[in-house]
Image (cartoon, rainbow, N blue to C red; front, side):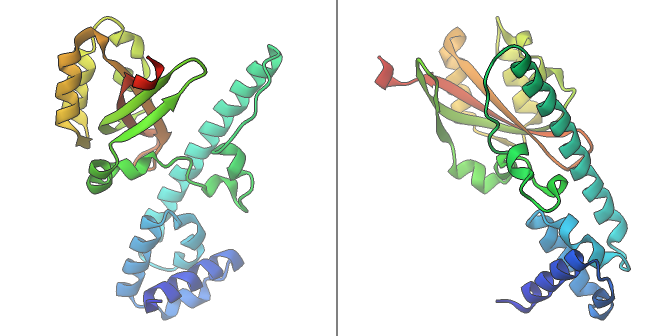
Length: 225
């Protein structure tokens, strides 16, 4: 194990014990590397106490607050959704996300989704297909765009805008995508009105209401025909 990782684990241990004394023996250069490592592994809240007396504390504290705010927003929305289902006699089981977060020592610190992986250009290029299985049909999926947008972005969160014409969505994706699969997008445009789009969203921490969006082309599976 690299020496930096040993210090990183000590930071996590000190954070769990709320012990800040140990950070004083780490150089500023090492602190910068540790902060970057914590951000890479999404563990900033766990190491935060160890950075309390360092130049990096303020920025890391703000990122922690953003993560916690995202959690509480999702938690409130999830509780409301589940209550509506129960009130109307619809049985439901909550899986992943919020339900798993409850198993963490500090639930607010858990990252709520994995779509953020698609913000990495290499990962996006290597993971371009998937499958959507519904009770009565199956779709093959081809991802064509990954975006970072606010939760108020109507181009994504008001999909009825594109019920009769997807060209506006295609233009929005081209102009705003972090990563774009131009070949798949061109094929969708050629498919015309027959194209269907699946949008997946998860909370992100770049700003208060940031959302990572993954757009995919839904193609009816040949196995259903």
